[in-house]
Image (cartoon, rainbow, N blue to C red):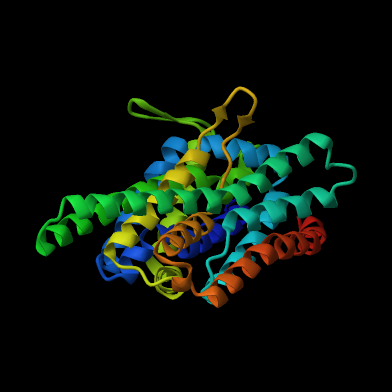
Length: 336
């Protein structure tokens, strides 16, 4: 069984190297937080967030994929992981959510007549959140930037005091961002295994561990390893190359990202709209937050060529992932 889980762990490592780093990327790029400190805190809080809030979004991806065989789960995770690892190697902030959903669709297309209307409805909802995520993050960051600008104008403080508060703020919102990432994106790593009977429930002292939370713990450890070992390059791409950020704008970008990602980690009943917990991309949320700051400061501060390359990566990710899963799946099924 460990062999079949290995691709999920590889995907978790890839997510940690690419997406989890984004919660501290702007802080590290602005030299307000050391990389070692950021990686350690991100690793701890992503595990905690996944254990507490992860099962909700895991159920959504489980419904989309409806994977009932280890070979299928292994293939989906492997295809997504290869795409994410490749984009990470190129230093691009790829969407792990898009890679996983693309691979799941590739899996469903391999099954004859398996893509029913309810699947298409759920897929449309997920795609709409992909569009809404960076827009909401940009609007949130824009609003926070304007409010903080007014606050600093009316409540000036000495530079040393401001620097101390900004460092503390970056640590706090980074931990919150890692928590939100774990709660939202844990589904990308282990949600594809949720329908399989892999583990019996366990009792650890006063706490009961369901299969979902045991999977979340394994996924969290894999993500943490990716953060610690291979996340620096993507931190620099988002935190330095797209828009030049100082400590204040770095804090705003991370906070806007964390708020949006945490929002989508929970199901919402809004009367006319029932929204399930949906894994969204922290990369998209952070880029949206950075763009919101760029718009607030002036559109000329945004490096459009970098933005274009990032957007092309987002478009290609689900398509390549779906095609790769569709190609690999027959081979894996024969070997199973």
